[in-house]
Image: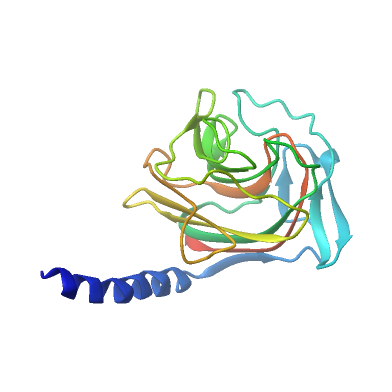
Length: 217
């Protein structure tokens, strides 16, 4: 195919892919106005509902006493009783930790048990253990990102994050504020189903406006 013709087709291909994602059925939504009974935290004492400029929000406000079996996030909360294969997960998130180089929040997905899952770490400054996509596979977390950024520019404002997961290709795409261009990418087929959740490696933050589209396992 001539290069010019291919270039003309690329926007159409992108539109088709975006439309396909949007057509995944909505499986779960939560704005926390009625509490957080639909969530499964690793340490319930570290989470609570708070008032925010957005209304009610779900806050992990304290350090968790949860001890994972391998080096991985200490404080997260999963959507109860729902496992998915392909999915798109959207949420609003607010870091409430004073600024430092590893200030972070995370999204957990493909969660099968405490020793088997993926997570994306939105870290202030990128290194091998921050601002990457990771796998926990019965061992300490290992980065699998093939693309990332110099860091997540945390401030004291609300942001938007998204995960898009295609299990057939293994593709994982992560978005932050800009929902058109992924900030992180990976390809991995180790876990093709699991729960989805929100949290932090070892910091604190607030969450709102969660939506999960996808295919139930």
